[in-house]
Length: 90
Image (cartoon, rainbow, N blue to C red):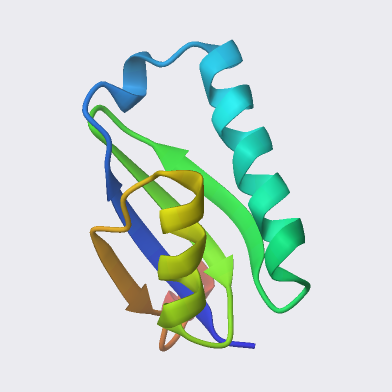
């Protein structure tokens, strides 16, 4: 299944409390269950004003639908072409 990185512009994201992040995560997971098993959330990185999420999905359309239902932006959706890490330098 294709992997995507989603960039979400969320002003103040880095200042959200654990409770706020848990609430957003719970809503996201609830919508994922509605959409079915073809879309999966792997993890997210929270920075100052952005959240970067990594998803498995068949296409960008279902990612945009998920974002719409959750009420979060999906400002940029990029398909991952390859994965590299430090071992690639060896």
